[in-house]
Length: 134
Image 1 (tube, one colour):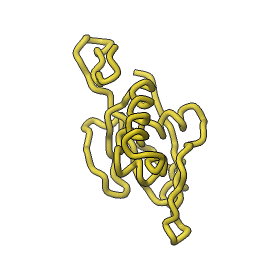
Image 2 (image 1 turned 45 degrees about the vertical axis):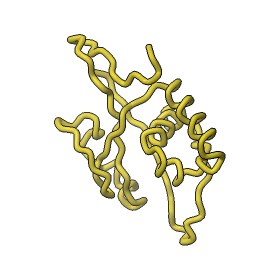
Image 3 (image 1 turned 90 degrees about the vertical axis):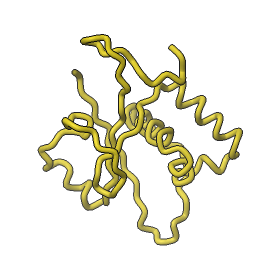
Image 4 (image 1 turned 60 degrees about the vertical axis):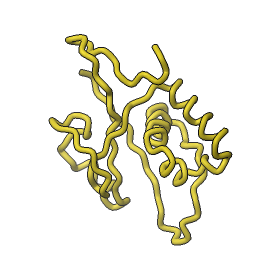
């Protein structure tokens, strides 16, 4: 399997599908109320939306760990260590940022990217990993 390849065969029909990683940005107050929500993760919705407004679900292509590593190494060579700052990586390559964050959350690892100093002291990040079987 080529590292650049994003499509995989459907386990049921064999058609090529492109897995998506869903995420939603929200405030800390919104995240505290997640246990009372009845809805499923964004991946289970009937239609995929591609928005990036606060509170809306967004999607990036799900990448394998080898691709994530190669992409991170490429950004390090091209832009130097400054790309290892969370806000910078998210701006430069959101797909890589959210895939890396997914793998860290999935395996209960800390996200090893430095936080930028926003100056207001109120910026907080949390990640919740959810997955299900078909």
